[in-house]
Amino acid sequence: ESSGINAEYGQNQDLHARMRTFLSTDKFFVPRYNIPLDEERELALERLRALCDNKFISVHFFSTNPTAVFAAHENASIVDGAMATKMTVQFNLFGGTVLKLGTARHKDVLDGIDNLSNIGCFGLSELGYGNNAVEMETTATYDPEGDEIVVNTPSVKAQKYWITNGAVHANQMVVFAQLMVGGVNNGIHGVLVPIRDSEGNVMPGVTIHDMGIKMGLNGIDNAKISFDNVRVPRTNLLNRESELHEGGEYETKISGNNRARFLKVADQLLSGRICIASMSQGAAKACMAIALRYSATRLTAGPSGKSDFPILGYQLQQRALIPLLAKTYVYDIALKEIQAMYAKYTLPSTQDVYTTSHREIVMMCCAIKAITGWHINEAATVSRERSGGQGYLAANRFGPAIGGSHSSMTAEGDNSVLMMKVAMEYLADLASKMNPSKNPSAAAGYILQQYTPGVVLRGGKGGSGSDVEWVRKIMKVREELLFTKLARSMVVKGGSKEEKRAARFKIWSQEQQDLVQAAARAYSERLISALTAEKIERADAELQPVLKKMYNLFLVSLLQENLGFYLTNGLISKGGAASLRGDFNRLVAEIAPDALALAEGFGITEEMLSAPIARDWELYNSYDNAGEMERYEDIVRS
Image (cartoon, rainbow, N blue to C red):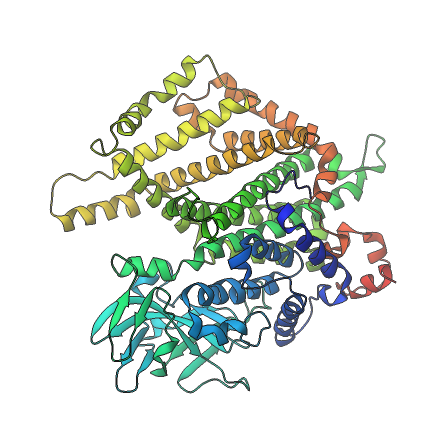
């Protein structure tokens, strides 16, 4: 990978190189498929331990170089999605929460995170409360007599659910609960609760149920966990932002209501979404590299009728894979930029001078997690299909990638719900700009946006996919039109406060969800486009031509996907729409000769890919392989 492409690569180049060398040379990371569940779980943990022992990941990276955390997640996901998921819970959700919300009194727990002497889990989601976790039922009640916090699960729906590391390995848990002091609910706070002792025995009052087999990532030990009035010291409250003093005096630095406190204590979900996006991208890169390597070496009927023509030479194969390759590059460039912006926003040394708002960071994290999560599902599914029967073999990696993609689409925020979050934040920002008393010029500008399509067409452009600046312009217009329409639809006149709230809820959740999703998606795509275009302009000169072609193909793909909107809103002519197919095919054909080199540009070694069809698949099938890779690795590494 070139520092000219990836914003963070120069900073983490040594980590990437060392980690990829380690993952490529240690046979412990060779995939294994037909193994018992308990062995699969131990393998995921021990692989994570090996990464920890070699200092590839540390919770303290969040204080020094957060992008290194994301780099470690990407590399880990290429070889073992279950290991990478256990990593993200241990170091981001559990470790990052203790680091950012804890204080000196929690140092003992923090010190055990990097070496896995303290394996943790993150107790936010409940059976009945996922996306609306602020309404969770679990309570943490202060008992002044014992100076203790009593953690309790009052109902079946209040069980902590889908708890990674919980079924087997974790001994600590950050439990999020409603903090009750003197009969007053102070909102959701994080409390450290030991769930196993040093011998691995479940602690008294804690009930842990193994959730068993899933559709993928079975190396993760997921659990549902409940508490029967479990007592912990008052000092187990993570007290960076809010303090509970002996005797019951409560104070907080967080202004606002209980929802505001929840958003603060759950802030680690933001970096978690970038971690998941990084894992999605690692898996997507691997899928594209495997599919393209196989497509270049699998021969079929050519002009002579003999099997002497690679399937990558067929337009069918190119039209399926090349646009996904282009999207993988574009999303990766944008993701690296968002990683860098998140790091600058959170690091103490830069946050005072950094101008990006918290709202913008939230929107970007939600957008990139959702878009890359959907992308890995498409990349894995299409790569599987275009690799024929070989793609159905677990050892060729697409099946595990598809299973993992569904975790990416759901974990730490359902993708479509995250789109709703993006739209809510966008509208909140739009509302402030449309208030004439606060910003008259901005308000006037937004009112005039209804005439923007005519202005675009009066510029003489009927529409061409090869005109990148024009495509970017109408993408921005689409975003503004959709959000302006959404904002207007949310206006409720008359009625009491409660009646207005009920009316807005109905509009939002029952009448305009197609508009909500489309508007948020338009923002996300325009954001990714803008970040990528800016980065390509700063890329090495010799890389720019092929990067610009992939970027152009990405834009044309988006135009085709949303062609109905552009036509019905007068943003593209019928002739321009008809020409998009030619633009698409031309760009695919121009990029195709470089496709294999571009896949190699991801920098993933053959050993990390560890898929027979990405290597010498004839050798792999020359002996009884039982669908495993261990013997193959013994042969090629001897």
